[in-house]
Image 1 (cartoon, rainbow, N blue to C red):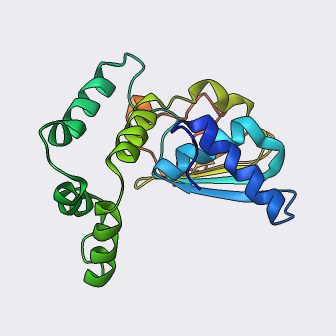
Image 2 (spheres, rainbow, N blue to C red):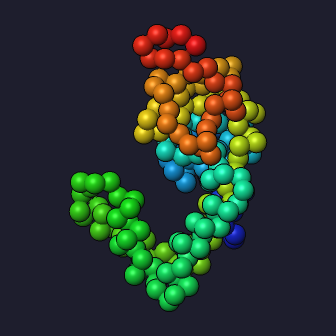
Length: 193
Protein backbone atom coordinates (compact mmCIF):
# COMPACT_ATOMS: atom_id res chain seq x y z
CA UNK A 1 0.00 0.00 0.00
CA UNK A 2 1.04 3.61 -0.52
CA UNK A 3 2.54 5.34 2.52
CA UNK A 4 0.21 7.67 4.46
CA UNK A 5 2.29 10.73 3.46
CA UNK A 6 4.71 11.27 0.63
CA UNK A 7 8.00 12.01 2.28
CA UNK A 8 11.33 10.24 2.24
CA UNK A 9 11.13 9.07 5.85
CA UNK A 10 7.84 7.25 5.27
CA UNK A 11 9.07 5.73 2.03
CA UNK A 12 12.33 4.62 3.65
CA UNK A 13 10.48 2.85 6.47
CA UNK A 14 8.90 0.47 3.96
CA UNK A 15 12.27 -1.03 2.99
CA UNK A 16 13.19 -2.63 6.34
CA UNK A 17 9.61 -3.91 6.61
CA UNK A 18 10.05 -5.56 3.21
CA UNK A 19 13.41 -7.04 4.24
CA UNK A 20 11.84 -8.35 7.45
CA UNK A 21 8.97 -9.94 5.53
CA UNK A 22 11.50 -11.65 3.26
CA UNK A 23 13.63 -12.66 6.27
CA UNK A 24 16.63 -10.79 4.82
CA UNK A 25 18.99 -9.35 7.44
CA UNK A 26 21.03 -7.23 5.03
CA UNK A 27 20.69 -6.40 1.34
CA UNK A 28 22.52 -4.66 -1.44
CA UNK A 29 20.21 -1.77 -2.27
CA UNK A 30 20.21 -0.44 -5.83
CA UNK A 31 18.54 2.85 -6.70
CA UNK A 32 18.23 4.88 -9.91
CA UNK A 33 17.10 8.52 -10.09
CA UNK A 34 14.39 9.02 -7.44
CA UNK A 35 15.00 5.43 -6.37
CA UNK A 36 18.59 6.44 -5.68
CA UNK A 37 17.33 9.19 -3.42
CA UNK A 38 15.19 6.67 -1.60
CA UNK A 39 18.18 4.33 -1.32
CA UNK A 40 20.20 7.16 0.27
CA UNK A 41 17.39 7.82 2.74
CA UNK A 42 17.29 4.12 3.64
CA UNK A 43 21.09 4.08 4.04
CA UNK A 44 20.97 7.10 6.35
CA UNK A 45 18.15 5.68 8.49
CA UNK A 46 18.83 1.94 8.32
CA UNK A 47 22.47 1.57 7.24
CA UNK A 48 22.82 -1.55 9.37
CA UNK A 49 20.37 -3.29 7.01
CA UNK A 50 22.57 -2.68 3.94
CA UNK A 51 25.61 -4.64 2.85
CA UNK A 52 26.23 -2.14 0.05
CA UNK A 53 24.62 0.70 -1.84
CA UNK A 54 24.56 1.07 -5.64
CA UNK A 55 23.36 4.43 -6.96
CA UNK A 56 22.79 5.41 -10.56
CA UNK A 57 21.79 8.73 -12.11
CA UNK A 58 20.94 10.27 -8.74
CA UNK A 59 22.08 13.00 -6.40
CA UNK A 60 22.42 13.62 -2.66
CA UNK A 61 20.11 16.64 -3.05
CA UNK A 62 17.59 18.00 -5.49
CA UNK A 63 19.23 21.18 -6.66
CA UNK A 64 21.14 23.81 -4.71
CA UNK A 65 20.20 24.49 -1.09
CA UNK A 66 18.67 27.94 -1.75
CA UNK A 67 15.19 26.63 -2.49
CA UNK A 68 14.61 29.00 -5.42
CA UNK A 69 15.40 26.31 -7.97
CA UNK A 70 13.04 23.85 -6.29
CA UNK A 71 10.22 26.42 -6.20
CA UNK A 72 10.65 27.09 -9.92
CA UNK A 73 10.73 23.35 -10.65
CA UNK A 74 7.49 22.76 -8.74
CA UNK A 75 5.74 25.74 -10.34
CA UNK A 76 6.66 24.53 -13.84
CA UNK A 77 5.68 20.92 -13.20
CA UNK A 78 2.41 21.73 -11.45
CA UNK A 79 1.25 24.56 -13.76
CA UNK A 80 -0.48 22.21 -16.24
CA UNK A 81 -2.43 20.53 -13.42
CA UNK A 82 -3.28 23.90 -11.90
CA UNK A 83 -4.58 24.93 -15.35
CA UNK A 84 -6.98 21.97 -15.39
CA UNK A 85 -5.05 19.36 -17.34
CA UNK A 86 -5.23 15.76 -16.10
CA UNK A 87 -2.53 13.17 -15.53
CA UNK A 88 -3.75 11.43 -18.69
CA UNK A 89 -3.14 14.69 -20.57
CA UNK A 90 0.38 15.05 -19.12
CA UNK A 91 1.50 11.42 -19.33
CA UNK A 92 2.68 11.35 -22.97
CA UNK A 93 4.91 14.40 -22.53
CA UNK A 94 6.21 13.24 -19.15
CA UNK A 95 7.11 9.80 -20.46
CA UNK A 96 8.67 11.14 -23.64
CA UNK A 97 11.30 12.75 -21.37
CA UNK A 98 11.76 9.62 -19.25
CA UNK A 99 11.82 6.80 -21.78
CA UNK A 100 15.12 6.20 -23.55
CA UNK A 101 15.36 6.88 -27.27
CA UNK A 102 14.75 3.69 -29.19
CA UNK A 103 12.84 2.07 -26.33
CA UNK A 104 10.40 -0.69 -27.20
CA UNK A 105 7.18 1.12 -28.22
CA UNK A 106 5.03 -1.41 -26.37
CA UNK A 107 7.01 -0.85 -23.15
CA UNK A 108 6.79 2.93 -23.63
CA UNK A 109 3.02 2.63 -24.06
CA UNK A 110 2.75 0.65 -20.81
CA UNK A 111 4.85 3.28 -18.99
CA UNK A 112 2.67 6.07 -20.39
CA UNK A 113 -0.51 4.27 -19.33
CA UNK A 114 0.93 3.77 -15.84
CA UNK A 115 1.79 7.48 -15.56
CA UNK A 116 -1.70 8.42 -16.79
CA UNK A 117 -3.20 6.31 -13.99
CA UNK A 118 -1.21 8.03 -11.21
CA UNK A 119 -3.63 10.00 -9.05
CA UNK A 120 -3.00 13.75 -9.22
CA UNK A 121 -2.52 13.97 -5.44
CA UNK A 122 0.14 11.25 -5.60
CA UNK A 123 1.99 13.07 -8.38
CA UNK A 124 1.86 16.36 -6.49
CA UNK A 125 3.05 14.69 -3.29
CA UNK A 126 5.95 12.94 -4.98
CA UNK A 127 7.05 16.16 -6.73
CA UNK A 128 7.03 17.97 -3.38
CA UNK A 129 9.05 15.16 -1.79
CA UNK A 130 11.50 15.23 -4.69
CA UNK A 131 11.98 18.99 -4.42
CA UNK A 132 12.58 18.73 -0.66
CA UNK A 133 15.15 15.91 -0.86
CA UNK A 134 18.53 16.78 0.69
CA UNK A 135 20.76 14.10 2.22
CA UNK A 136 24.12 15.85 1.76
CA UNK A 137 24.56 15.91 5.52
CA UNK A 138 24.37 12.09 5.76
CA UNK A 139 26.92 11.16 3.10
CA UNK A 140 30.04 11.13 5.25
CA UNK A 141 28.37 8.84 7.79
CA UNK A 142 27.52 6.07 5.31
CA UNK A 143 29.38 2.99 6.50
CA UNK A 144 28.60 0.50 3.76
CA UNK A 145 30.45 0.21 0.43
CA UNK A 146 28.93 2.57 -2.15
CA UNK A 147 29.08 2.44 -5.94
CA UNK A 148 27.90 5.50 -7.87
CA UNK A 149 27.13 5.53 -11.56
CA UNK A 150 26.42 8.62 -13.60
CA UNK A 151 26.36 9.05 -17.35
CA UNK A 152 29.95 10.30 -17.15
CA UNK A 153 31.65 8.34 -14.38
CA UNK A 154 31.64 5.43 -11.99
CA UNK A 155 32.72 5.94 -8.38
CA UNK A 156 33.39 3.13 -5.96
CA UNK A 157 33.93 3.54 -2.25
CA UNK A 158 34.89 0.77 0.09
CA UNK A 159 33.76 0.42 3.69
CA UNK A 160 36.96 2.26 4.75
CA UNK A 161 35.61 5.45 3.18
CA UNK A 162 38.25 5.67 0.46
CA UNK A 163 37.25 5.49 -3.16
CA UNK A 164 37.98 6.55 -6.68
CA UNK A 165 36.35 7.61 -9.91
CA UNK A 166 36.96 5.52 -13.01
CA UNK A 167 36.54 8.62 -15.20
CA UNK A 168 36.20 12.35 -14.53
CA UNK A 169 32.72 13.43 -13.57
CA UNK A 170 30.88 16.37 -15.07
CA UNK A 171 28.34 16.49 -12.25
CA UNK A 172 27.02 19.90 -11.28
CA UNK A 173 27.90 21.32 -7.85
CA UNK A 174 24.47 20.41 -6.48
CA UNK A 175 25.19 16.81 -7.36
CA UNK A 176 28.80 16.65 -6.16
CA UNK A 177 29.75 13.70 -4.01
CA UNK A 178 33.44 14.69 -3.71
CA UNK A 179 34.48 15.53 -0.18
CA UNK A 180 31.36 14.05 1.32
CA UNK A 181 32.43 10.44 0.89
CA UNK A 182 36.15 11.10 1.43
CA UNK A 183 36.85 10.35 -2.20
CA UNK A 184 40.17 9.98 -3.88
CA UNK A 185 39.89 11.14 -7.48
CA UNK A 186 42.46 9.71 -9.89
CA UNK A 187 43.06 9.81 -13.56
CA UNK A 188 42.28 6.67 -15.53
CA UNK A 189 45.48 7.12 -17.50
CA UNK A 190 47.83 7.72 -14.56
CA UNK A 191 46.05 5.69 -11.90
CA UNK A 192 47.40 8.15 -9.29
CA UNK A 193 45.38 9.87 -6.60
